Length: 369
Image 1: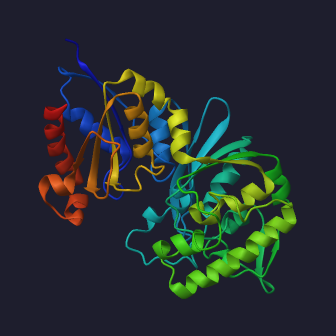
Image 2: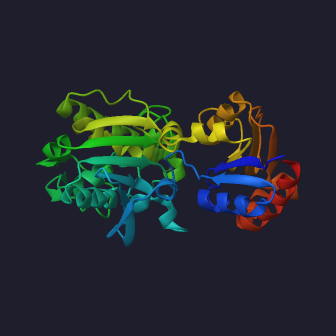
């Protein structure tokens, strides 16, 4: 009897382990004498997307110094493929993970640093850019990014210093200059981890504002400012933006790109599944192991571990889910293992000790495959 073929395709355990770390721990815990293993970390376009993509095939990594969301100098990177396309994660320059214990303030946080990355890419002659929208600290509608590309935002007669403040909440006039023509010359792919529209009850400010430090009053202000910004972009570009799903991702950074560039929006989970040839790998496998930090009722509603589980189930494969915590009904898995339940620990403890607990849990999983 031959070895069982095991496909390991986890997303990250957010706040604890990257997708690559989860995949490595599971792989190391399975005996090569018993199993033939293929490993592929995955993402839905949020944090870790660049890392996941770079593990799949060869890319050129480019590093550069930029400003983070609060205008502090940092180093970030983007990827280039052989076809001359660039891949940029908004979380790389403008990510919330950079800010650590800093008190979050969406009135300060800006996508200026992401704009610096775009500027570097365009100056190198590249005109196709894929953005991974997820994990940002910002709700600036892409105003900071535009400022880095040359747009001028004013508060009265005073030019706004867009690398240290969110221009959206301060500007009363803008001069686009040559930025609109610059954006018209490039092709953009927006790869989103959410499908929220830009404004409204489920828009960027109302849903993600509190996560990024906004008080209820600040949410109202940002929502109002965002509505005016959307109208300005629609009037200038003559394109419909307000009702487009996905533009609420990453604080609306995709708004000016959709307004002025040749832009397409893709669901992050589906984009990765197609780009990484995951369906073919599922065909190869006998057992599929996937998971993320929390497996809950949302997992089977478009999140990448849920899609992988559904695809595997359709093909008659055994599906194992691993996670930090487990809640809700999850019918797409044959077996489910969570750190909190397996070891009877709190969520906080599991996050701090995720690596050692996952190593122990994999030994249990190995015995049940």
